[in-house]
Amino acid sequence: MHRELHKKMNVLKLFTEKRMFEYEKPQMTYDRETGEVEIFDPMEEKRKPKKKIIKDVDEIYAEKERVLKELNMDSPTEPAGENLQHEELVKKAEKIRT
Image (tube, rainbow, N blue to C red; front, side, top):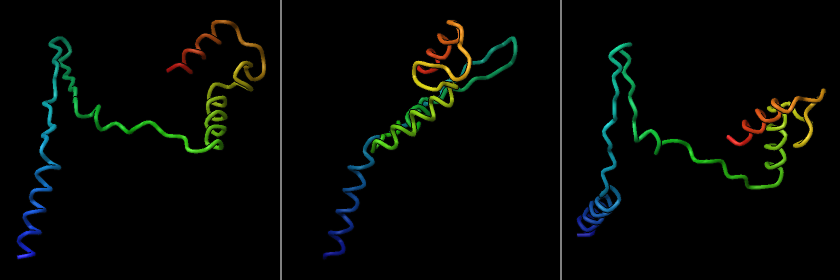
């Protein structure tokens, strides 16, 4: 009796957890001139990793140092080494925003 009840409870649990079917058909485009086929999978967007959550202050400073090193800057307001032109600073600012 207990085993049968346990089986039924597991089946009900599966039905409640898997009640939504989330498949979406991939979309394709075909370029006749080049013969190139592009496939856009809408489920791929859902599978992307979530953003990193910083849990302590040390991670904040490490991330800040990594970004400054990537942009070749000594501080958030001063470039490393020589003085950069205005256009280069604008490009680096755009890189930070994205």
